Image: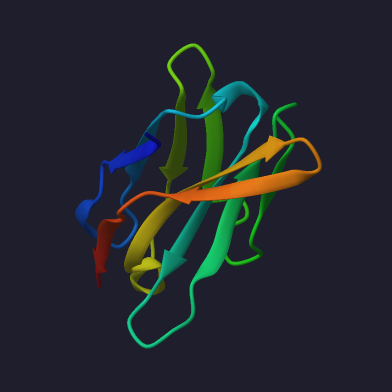
Length: 119
């Protein structure tokens, strides 16, 4: 059974920091691309950050220079360090794993963790 368990969300003032964690089980974590998405009220879910199996990273323009994604394959965990938070970062943040199997890839999602940034 696949499980992605996010933690670390909460309420923070603008300019503050939070570190999200996502612990994965039931997947081949080391070969999976790991992603963080977010969805604000009334908006579509958007990709925030990606880290591949070879530790290549990519970020949405809105978070470049402020957020850092990392992974610890020994712990099957991916992190999102969020600094200089802004009110517009307020959203539910979701962990996503894209696990390759043969010629296909399978997506798995966590339940989400709320991040609220007050002005």
